Length: 150
Figure 1 (cartoon, helix red, strand yellow):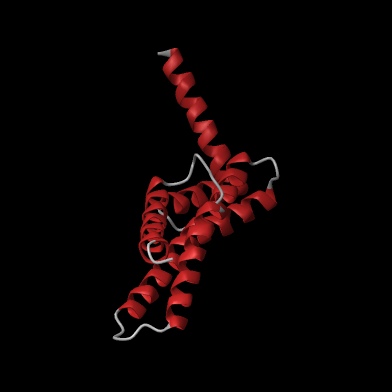
Figure 2: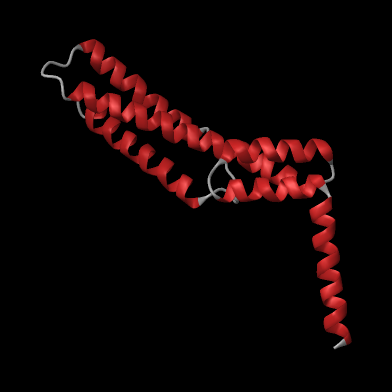
């Protein structure tokens, strides 16, 4: 019984510490936003928490991971836009040499940017999968269009 009471006191003390320590409270909120995929908000809050306490490792980790996740998220958004533009161009009745050059450049950007994405073991697997799908689609298109008709 004594151990249970001591454990509860310890848990309550830790709770109070985090509740009244602004930096840790904000970093917990940032972590929640990160887990829900709202990386910009997580980065903003984690940055605020880290400014308040440079020793807050949770804030530093969430800040770093949010920056990396935003880069991946931006890659996915940009590659989706490029793939949509490529599809629009390919649906034209006549595809000009300029269109082919534009398609080639967009595919090269998608492929090149994927290879430059920062790696992280803590990154959401869903982001990795979406990025990999777009990369794979771009490589297949590029090989199908430009390597077979040299």
